[in-house]
Image (cartoon, rainbow, N blue to C red):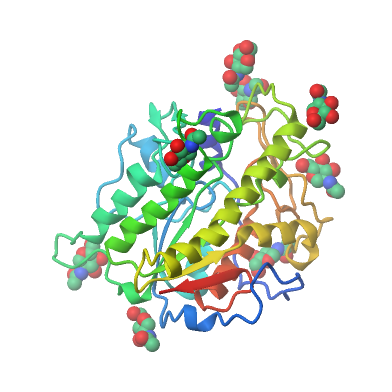
Length: 372
Ligand SMILES: *[C@@H]1O[C@H](CO)[C@@H](O)[C@H](O)[C@H]1NC(C)=O
Ligand SMILES: *[C@@H]1O[C@H](CO)[C@@H](O)[C@H](O)[C@H]1NC(C)=O
Ligand SMILES: *[C@@H]1O[C@H](CO)[C@@H](O)[C@H](O)[C@H]1NC(C)=O
Ligand SMILES: *[C@@H]1O[C@H](CO)[C@@H](O)[C@H](O)[C@H]1NC(C)=O
Ligand SMILES: *[C@@H]1O[C@H](CO)[C@@H](O)[C@H](O)[C@H]1NC(C)=O
Ligand SMILES: *[C@@H]1O[C@H](CO)[C@@H](O)[C@H](O)[C@H]1NC(C)=O
Ligand SMILES: *[C@@H]1O[C@H](CO)[C@@H](O)[C@H](O)[C@H]1NC(C)=O
Ligand SMILES: *[C@@H]1O[C@H](CO)[C@@H](O)[C@H](O)[C@H]1NC(C)=O
C-alpha cells in the first residue's frame, strides 16, 4: 500500500489547460469568527513575494518523487522542487495555484506521506526503505539549509524579505490517519497533543530563523474523505488502507472526533501562543479554516465545483485496484470534491488556493488573525 501512494503521487493523469481562477461568490455561512473583531490590524503583510510551505501529499509537488528516484536520498541543498502536473490531487496542488494567482516565489518542502514528526507517528515507506521524510526531521531542516544557501555564483538562493514571506504548514492527514493515530500506531507515550506540540515547535524553528508571517491550515474534514467516510460512502478496502478489519462507521466517527478536537486546539492555542504567552514576538499568524471551507464545498458544491456532470462530493475521480494499478479516471474531474479515496480533487485544491490568496491579504472569512 505504501508503494501505491507513490504510484498515486506519480500517476499519469492528463491535465488540460489552465485559465484564470473561477469567480464564485462566497455563499457560505460565517465561520466561528469572534464578532466585532478587526482582522486587518493583526495581519499587516505589505507585500507577498514568497511562500514557504511544509506539508504532505495535499501540498507536495515532486519532493517525494525525488527520494523515490534517488534511492531514498534527499535533494541537495538549493534544489528547486519542480511543479507537478500529476500530483496526488490528479493535477497541480494548491500551492502551484497560489503561485499562479499571485506571482509569489514558491519554496515547497512538502513530502507526500509526511507527518509532523517521525518520533510520534512514523510511517514506513518501502520504496525508500525508511519512514516518509517528516516535517521535524526533514522538511524544516531542508528549509533552514536552503535559507543559508548561496549559489556557486555567489547569489543567495532565497532572496525574499522575511517581511514579504509567508510560511504555511498543512499537516495532519497522515498523522491522524491509517498506520498512525486512527489505528493506535503512534509511538508509546505520545498522543494528539504531542502532534499539535510538534506543529508549533516547527513554526518556532522557522520563527527563530527570521520568519514572521505564518499560516496554519487546520485539518481537513478527513471523515468526509472516502477512505474515512461512513457507509454508504466508505471506500472500504482501498489502495491506501488495504486489508481493513475496522468497523467503517466507528472509524469515521472517531476520525471526526480527532479532527474537530485538533482543530479546536489550533483555534484556541494560536491566540494563546501568540498573544498571551507571546511565544512569537513581532509575528503575525493566520489560522486558515480549510476544514470549514472543505466542509462547505461538501455541503454547497455548486458554489465551488464547475464540472458539467452532476456534482459529486462523496465519490471520487480515480478508481484503482488494491495495489494501485488499473486506475480509471472519471472524465469529468471538475465535478468531484475528491480525486481518490484520500486526496482532494484539483478543483478543491484550486478553491483552497483562491481562499489562501484572501488569507494572505488579511481579508478571508475563513481565517482568524493574531499578532504580537
Ligand atoms: C513587492 O515585491 C516585488 C517583488 O520583489 C517588488 O517588485 C515590488 O516593488 C514590491 N512592492 C512593494 C509595495 O514593496
Ligand atoms: C546565479 O546562479 C543562479 C542559479 O543558477 C541563477 O538563478 C542566478 O540567475 C545567477 N545569478 C547571477 C547574477 O548570475
Ligand atoms: C500526551 O502527550 C503529552 C505531550 O507529548 C505528554 O506530556 C503526556 O504525557 C501524554 N499523555 C499521556 C497520557 O500519554
Ligand atoms: C492482504 O492480505 C492478504 C492475505 O493475508 C495478503 O496476501 C496481502 O499481501 C495483503 N495485502 C497487503 C497490501 O497487505
Ligand atoms: C459497526 O459499528 C456500528 C456503530 O457502532 C454498528 O451499528 C454496526 O453494527 C457495526 N458493524 C459491524 C459489521 O459490526
Ligand atoms: C473549472 O474552472 C477551472 C479554472 O478556471 C478551469 O480551468 C476548468 O476548465 C473549469 N472546468 C470546466 C469543466 O469548465
Ligand atoms: C459519485 O461518484 C461515485 C464514484 O466514486 C459513484 O459511485 C456515485 O454514484 C456518484 N454519485 C452521484 C450522486 O453521482
Ligand atoms: C492491479 O493492477 C495491476 C496492473 O494491471 C496488476 O498488476 C495487479 O495485479 C492488480 N492488483 C490487484 C490486487 O488486482
